[in-house]
Length: 213
Image (cartoon, rainbow, N blue to C red; front, side, top):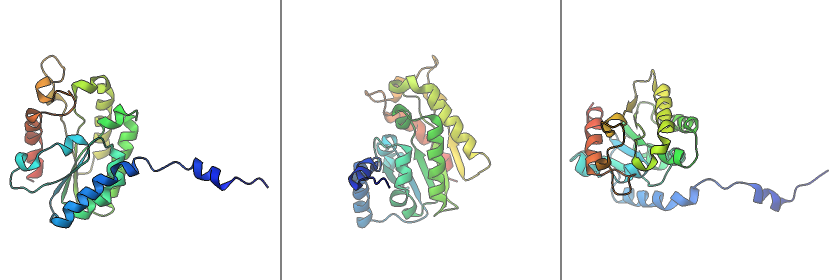
């Protein structure tokens, strides 16, 4: 009988993707919670750096929304850490932005869709009545080459949401394009990827009506 050495099996076991990378961010969130745990029934923002850089106190004064964005993350990371940065707060509404890092990192629109479905499942397993708002992937100048894949992701997510009134899609695409059909540069920082104050002003107006319901 052929036996495989234990050392070989250990070497061939793939590490959990990004697990150590985000542990410091998770612990930082938990330290904040230890000082002041957010009240249940609120709104939690989660996702990549577009969320992390969002100054929620200025955008939505007095609302005490919870920001749990961690820069550079992909949608699968929000799935992996859902219990630590989403469901533990028992929010009534979750605002999610992710996907463009995924595509830029080589993942397919179908994988993003599947990760979105996994995120919904992770939330609904603990919070069946919570609303999930997906902010459509934005058309940044820096990643304009991926525009067709971004639009495909957005389309696939919308298809997943059909028939579920507690899943909401917010379109961020057309409003960030100029008359020439190109991304409006003034809506982005000098890195042409992350949004400027003007960009967030547009998103605040898009999102506010959904948060007030």
